[in-house]
Amino acid sequence: MIRPDIHPHDGILVAKNLVKVFGKRTVLDNVSLAIEEGKTTVIIGTSGCGKTVFMKHLIVLERPTEGQVFFRCNRIDDLRPRQLAGIRTQFGFCFQMGALFDSLTVFENIIFPIQQHRKITDYKALDELVKHKLALVGMDGYQNQYPASLSGGQKKRVSLARAIALDPTVIFYDEPTTGLDPVTSDVINELILKLKQELKVTSIVVTHDMKSAYKIADRIVMFYHGKIIADGNADHIRNHPNDLVQQFIEGRVSEADLAALKLGGTKYQTQFLPEDFK
Ligand SMILES: Nc1ncnc2c1ncn2[C@@H]1O[C@H](COP(=O)(O)OP(=O)(O)OP(=O)(O)O)[C@@H](O)[C@H]1O
Ligand SMILES: [Mg+2]
Image (cartoon, rainbow, N blue to C red):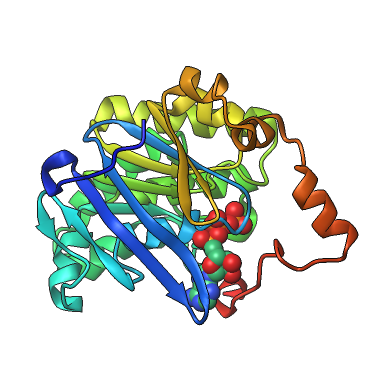
């Protein structure tokens, strides 16, 4: 069901008629979406369709060309950096490229967001907090290790622990299972489910991994060229009549994409950005 109109009170986070233009390119083309509190919303779509850009708008790491973003009915897309910092303490990020800081230990990585927002005086309480967060993701005991000594799955788990350090109300995950083997991916899926149940958080997850999407999603939203083309629960998506949706979930390449590849077209090529290399 794709709603024609949307209101700030329709969800905990609401994107209303978002348009984002980079240069001559429209990356978000009038996107409206209300994120329901306490639910897991999964965003799917082919590479370059605007998923990460959309997510960045929800946390105001990008500002829209047109449209608005509301958090708990308050407009946030036009806030100043200082006001935003306060709101962002309620958000936890587990980002595609936002890996751990290699020069910091696991402990230091986890307290990083806390230090940004509070002056720490009670170190014993901090030890307890880090222990608790790491225990939630099954990584207690790794406090003094450096990221270089961890496997990919362990790093993702630590970045999840960091995402929940400030007890967020909303957690954003950008491709949490990418690059992981199926078993480790499932560990991450279980963790996302567990954090939802135990911390009652609202989760927004961008993924290409349909197995993960079906397992964790209360709702799946599919983007295509900067627009939402499907929105519903797992069954709705599985049985969706739109061929673009079926092609994506079955991992089939479309005739148009195939033709573009044969022509050596660059239309669907994802462009690298400086931040991709950070
Ligand atoms: N800061 C920017 N400046 C210019 N173009 C950008 C910027 N950020 C993203 N884009 C472009 O916007 C489009 C959508 O990017 P986005 O990162 O949202 O894709 P995505 O759906 O997350 O893809 P993937 O699945 O590969 O991560 C891409 O073509 C990308 O090159
Ligand atoms: Mg992305």
